[in-house]
Length: 213
Image (cartoon, rainbow, N blue to C red; front, top):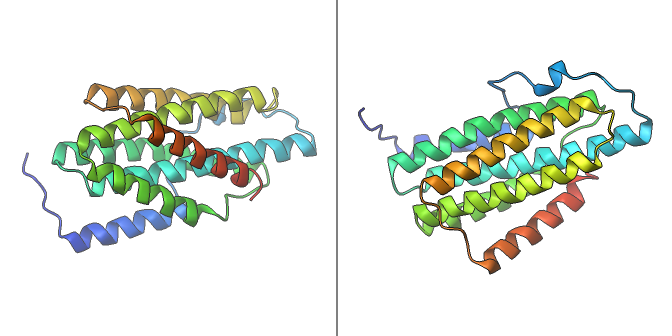
């Protein structure tokens, strides 16, 4: 297959377009939402607010994942690696669309802090990519592992009768595991402890604020 050499400006414009769609919550899913087959449970006002808070956190997590993948694809050292990051980003776009749709159904909205979170994650992805493909992939492994743990905790926190939100979180969790395994199989080097700790700290700030705003 012939390699496509995109003009840097084209890449910049397509990157900016991607960023805008991610931040504003305009994502299109290639798979139907897992919530479609789930029963619509009756939620009290407090439960509805709680579910919305958790789903907003999940949406922000996906905004950050998109930013990471976009940055890593842009600064990847090889075409193969770029293709890998772009593919993962496309799969994760489903998550963006599903969580945004669920937030609407819960009478809520996506986080107003999305542009900030996107910028922060994009910067992190850029740093990861400059460290070479193996470290960049290792960064994906660690990100996905943290997100997976996070989603597992949400399954404990979501109201038991909110089957729609739970179905979405279950599927997201399965996808994150697959992405982490794929990055590891491609030769990802797991980042050193200080990097892991910085990522965890950043995630804590993100989840604490995104739940409310």
